[in-house]
Length: 188
Image (cartoon, rainbow, N blue to C red; front, side, top):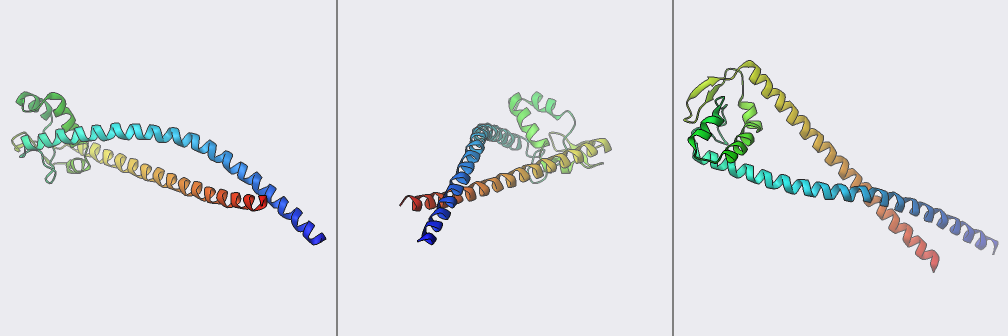
């Protein structure tokens, strides 16, 4: 009988410890969830805005490619003439804001930055040679490529960390469910 009483005390002690751990985990989850929920709301709002802007930029770029196929291409990306924006505005085939969006998208792409090599020929609206890329311009393009790659690595790192946190939360939730099942067994 004393073995049974000792076992009962041991089970009650373990259950108390489990309840304390469960409370600590729940408190930790509440703190983490509050921060995470606000971050998710902000990220969702930002990503929707970013998606709309990206879609508008891509649509403007498509119009530019259609209007000037000898100059703008996704496959054969070449450095553009310095001051080509003024030429596009003067040509009046597209609205000024569309031209700005499209050019910004085009010249910030990795393909364009990679095409900006020292001595490479720049082209005008007719696809004809209109200057060459200087060493400083090529160096600037290489710097931008490195920045973009660093930003991508940082985003990938953040994504991996978020995935690890999610796995940790899921593990804690499984642990909580198991503890809850133990508590329910005690209640019987």
